Amino acid sequence: MKELPRLYAITDRRKYGEDFLGTLEKVLKKGVKMVQLREKDLKGRELYDLALKVRDLTKKYDALLLINERFDIAKAVEADGVHLPERSFPPSVVKRLFPDMIVGFSAHSLEGALYAEREGADFITFGPVFKTSSHPEAKPVGLMKLKEVASKVGLPVYALGGVTWEKIKVCYKNNAYGVAGITIFIDEDKGPDT
Image (cartoon, rainbow, N blue to C red):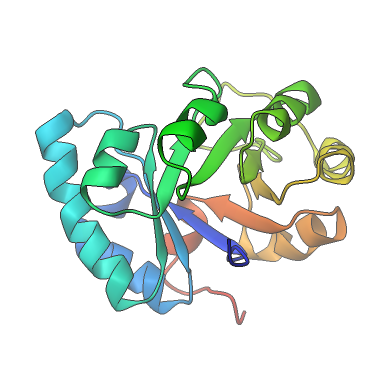
């Protein structure tokens, strides 16, 4: 598997607005090279139809596409992989069925991160590192926990949750491989060069 990109965008139609694909294209123009289609409210056919459009867009910008949890849809649209929530299928199941798929895993503790590694995940998202509007009820794990997890797990660890462009450097200083998020990449005025 080639090296994973450092910037990982996660979609949310409510936050991307009415022009979902237009907003996603702006995100890709900023240099984001990995996208997770995470539209959990869509049923199979709706998600498939949207995934086809997103696949075309990610190909245009030479970006990886992961589908949230639905490895059947990921295979159907020739996505690069899936991202599994903590209570989803074990990564080993997806790897057994589709050995070439990239498998990401959401971890919220060291135990969850170590489980993902044992199960053969390719990377984890870890968080929320900071307070986040996407999950206001979730208690932030903090930078020290990010550093601990990143140093004890032999997988790329993406800092997730409340990460802003101003906080990216401090995440990298605490051993994050990359950053993942929804709103960070749709901020009109900021990007990787700010």
